[in-house]
Image 1 (cartoon, rainbow, N blue to C red):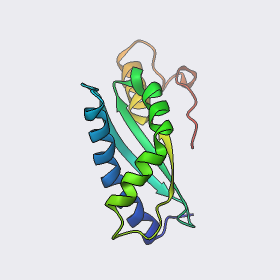
Image 2 (cartoon, rainbow, N blue to C red; image 1 turned 180 degrees about the horizontal axis):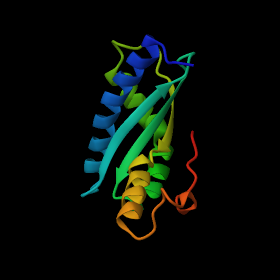
Image 3 (tube, rainbow, N blue to C red; image 1 turned 45 degrees about the vertical axis):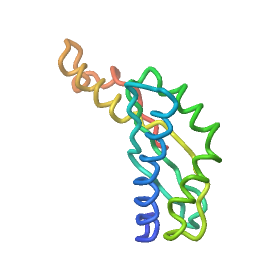
Amino acid sequence: MEETQRQKKIGSVLQRDLVDVLQNAASQGGMRGIIISVSKVKVTVDLSVAKVYLSIFPNDKAKELLVGIKSNTPLIRHELAQRTRHQLRRMPNLEFFIDDSLEYIDKIEQSLKGKENPITDPNLLDNRKKT
């Protein structure tokens, strides 16, 4: 089912403001050299839940940062509600996920450059799960 215009608009508003909130939190927390980007925000049909997909660089710190972000979800949600109070009546609940598409692309690139070619042997790449 395709997203409605309202879902897309809310998703883009949340995406723009989430980038600011997360980058500010990372810099105030003393984390240097970490880039957090919000690659996608999908809002459910009833506008009650927003699934937020994050790309975190470097990849080795992604899991621990995701745990920290999930534990601070109420604070992040409150900050977003303050920023979007004139645009949204109700703030959707936030669910955070790691977007591994860049890592997946990197694996494909490395495989194509190496001797093992995933085009000739598709078993070389991990099966990709859709969320």
